[in-house]
Amino acid sequence: MDTREVIDCAPEFEAQMRLPLVALHRGVAHTESMSEPAYPVWWRGAFPHEARTWDSALRALGREPADFLPLPVHPFQLSPLRETFAAEIAQGQLILLDDAAITGRPGMSFRTLWTEGADPRHMPMVKLPVALRLTSVQRTLTPRSARMGPRISRLLATIREREPQLARYWDFVPERHGIHVLLEPADDERARHLGALYRDNPTSRLHSGQMAIPVGSLFVDDHNNEPLLRQWVAIAQGASDHQAALRLFQDYVATALPGLLDLYLIYGIAFEAHQQNSFMVMDDAGQPSRLLIRDFGDLRIHRPSLVRQGLTLEIHDPALTLFDDPDFVRAKLLHAGFMCHLGELALLCQRHWPELDEQALWSVLARQVAERFEHVRPRTDPDRWESERAAFLEHRWPAKSFLRMRLAQTQNDIAGQMDNPLRAWIGNA
Image (cartoon, rainbow, N blue to C red; front, side, top):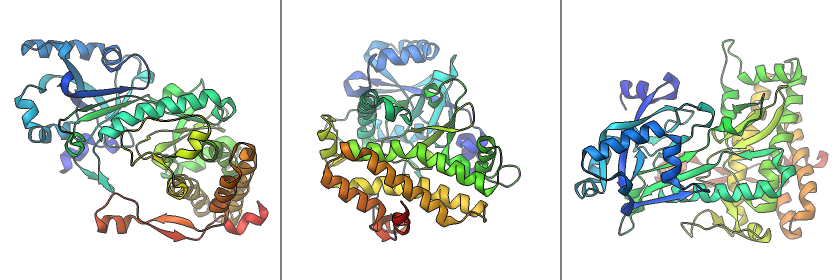
């Protein structure tokens, strides 16, 4: 991307973008919905003005809107579509319209955008493919993601209904609707460049007086060159010294662990709950209230644990999402939730408050992990409970190697081993 494109599209510059609406023929489209109404009806309700403009643009070309589905496209992706889907365009299965669009603003992610409308709190976010390598991979949207997002959201909604106590500490941002091009013969490599996934606005999951804090924002320096975490410590604790920071860290971990560890031990669900995918909800008194998790594209589920709870999940790819190997599932939670989220938060506290002993922070995490294990023990298979407790608190942890993955030109995880930072505190746990 050149400098102008970065400024026009990046969240750092508060970009506001026109997202062109293309028309995808129903015969070559697959839609997936978490619940009723289905995508066509829902979309018209969410974007009534844009729907009328889209209808008019199609009729001006002599096409019947009922035969097509609306699909927003990232402006950076529009030009590559002409080449990638030249055959579908020539056959009239994909129509690029000049005058129809919705408006979007990028959030923390370049290609996930807030849409605009009359009720901002309930306007959806839309995740779109872009043929760009951003961080470690090219940010496309696979047919699997478009299908599995709503299916996983339906499963998580069922679990929240079953678990009112757990729901006090954990919530998720539903992925309501997905759409992707349906190619014959199947060609997911090409199809991943044309699709969309609609999420709820995170603010729609909040109660009065609450605020959803993106965890990644806590690491950003404010106007005093101090992490925003310090401001939260002052709000929540009435002071911002190292003792106040330790108290907030204790409260934060106690709020986050049920949604991360309990769900994994009981239902086998390992969220990719790193800083960008996690919000900590602050209540009206400034206290950590609930962990809010988004993005289920790389979520992993331990199949035997889910089945043990009488639940199942329809999958798109038999090699993904549901796994029988607990080590592979656990590695996702340890890397994203424990290392990149809770562990990095502990290290931030130690760096910013040098008086705060790093050992005290790891001891807090070890003790609370051990407490969660005791809490869920009656609901967990005894053998699984023993092996998982040892894996979290005693054994070495897997360490994901991004450099080796990049050199190998693979998106598959390559991991080494690292010392378990909680092991030294197991006696105090």
